Length: 329
Length: 259
Image (cartoon, each protein chain N blue to C red):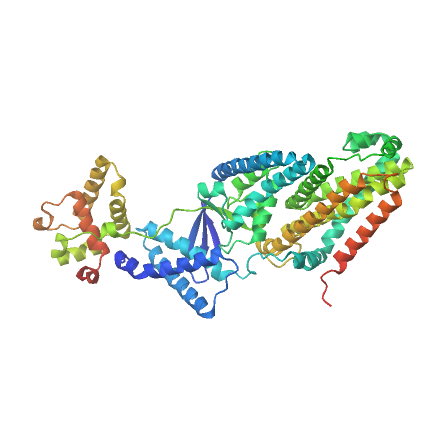
């Protein structure tokens, strides 16, 4: 069918222009709410323009008009058929105190898997040091950790001045960014059906277990607890939560027995992944500050019992926060 | 409902309307990312200079802020711009690319964050190897981050409201003096033939003079064979004018002509 093109365009163009202005307003202001009359008008314009597109689609000789209408209908389609919540809104306190812990609890099974992978790594690392001390040179990632723990403790405890004087903020920032990079990678490797995530968590556990057992065997238990607890009480759970996010992603990819499509499963977890990784970022920011400003100071500057107690309190508070915060009364 | 044909994603709405997007391939996406990297470098350089100034007051704070801002810029650049510009960064804007929801729905903030954070997996082991391979083998040219976030990157054609003034300027059409032949012409011409003639007229100013003459001569010769108008209707008509008359007859109905 060949339609009367100039007449068609001149009759319909005003509706297209009106629809375009409505769509532009909706796109420009995600929080904009239309009244009932506006919604009715928008729906009418969308249907009319869709009908125009259907009409012109059979008419191959005017690709310019067709492209214009396709673009317009596509934009309006996104607004008309979107059933998910409106766009992201900033309510940080509500998000942190309610949304984040609820999301954490909703995926608690993934967290336990993440914890199990890390604990398995800890056991492996600890046993490796216990049974084969030569393995230390291979396992320890930093040369500072490969030395004799007793000597290190002796040197650290000799220091009376501010060891990190003038670089505390820099050290803290470096820790935050490094740990956040690792956490994002742990989450991203969920794309490997969780294999990469589990390997990274296991490796993290291996180092943690090896260092701890190495210091315990050297009778430096108080030192290692006082060194790791203040920041580790937050940092390690944060990485476990990043692992949880990776495993949630992996779970959606695998979809054991789920009656919905892969696309739908991924769509459902999108907000939860965002929530978990933002929560991890906040926890790591705190851990970075504590590691730089407290963990690196030892006796006689800061007594070990005080550092251990600080870490224990943090851990209890974090556990209570994740378990209880945001529960409906 | 969606379907994929070649490098095009076609969406059929519940109303039965079909529209399509042209998917962006890995090469053009890589170029856009190079532009974005240059932008990230420029912004990071600015923060470096600011940090150097701040270092006079406190080197420690200055270096800490520099580290944090560099990380925030490298990770947050794409997230912030794709959110503010509805799926576009500077590189994508320059190359007319846009990130879209895979089903044509509104792009969500969580989708933008996920596709950008999962870049950490796409860049492995180096130079976007994983993401590039994924993009090449994926039917929708998606890297892993796009796949997980349900997003696609499309090429945005330049769309403007149609301007048909160029073909409606025929003041006198000698073919309309022969209504029975004009009707036969409308009947015998196919939509494809009519489309070619229309496009030739719309784009005639962009053709070389020689090509323009050749094209209209060919088209006029073709239409002369379809319906033979009497000599008084075609006398003095150039090939281009002949085609204009044909298009005028085919695309403008009787009612429009009487206006």
